Image (tube, rainbow, N blue to C red; front, side):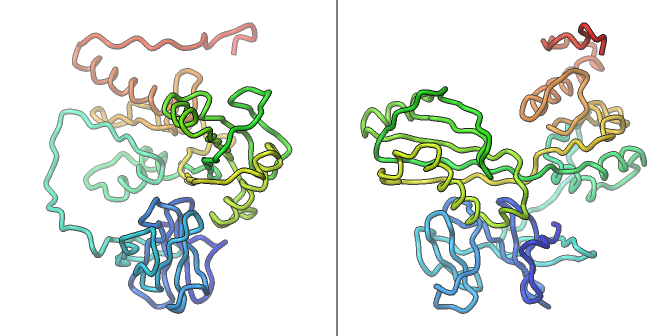
Length: 323
């Protein structure tokens, strides 16, 4: 877990980003997970809690003491505590204190598919034992994560007029890049809207700068302000509920990184990769890349076993420019 310089102070350090953040007091050997046990939003320090240095959830108001003990709901469980196993510079390795003891045993198989995001795959390699090809270790270690993304969904007690598409890309806002009207496109939300007369609206920010929005409170405040700019009539509506998804695990693709990016079939004959970071032989990205690389991994195994592979349909990689 990497230190977050935007949040850290001399008294309290923060590690991680998005919806995976931990706090670590100076000279302490224990860290606290700041993921609210209600719905996973990241709690932040507040003076409102009676216990000095407590935390509050920006999404639904749950409060915790400095030690992570629940002070006020809707959360029912305390924040999870972690032991600091080791620290190297700005990185720490943590282990859950309250977790059940898990007995490890070797997992033997003819083939292995590592399907994880970049932090997960790099963590797996940090635990690897035995002979790992040096070029493969280098390829995995130099993978980078893109700027974080955030998605917030609002429930309101009324509908509103909307002339654009039910999914519309936007520009000109500090944070929001698109809006989706779920109560008009997804059946369970359509049914809810018909019963209640309400609406369900989602705003997306697929690549924002952490320096501008270092906390989830800043994200929620800006999303709500911009929603009322996009749909002014909702200012008179009552917000019934909201949910935030905020993560920092999308694959980054900096210039020059394509040539040395791992492909599905690794340098180890029985190890394959799947994820949104894998180098692909045809155009695709995000979740489509993760799924397609998984299918390529399965096809690689099938080919080695002499079995029929699954055909994958894609765009023609060559066009008028012969790219």
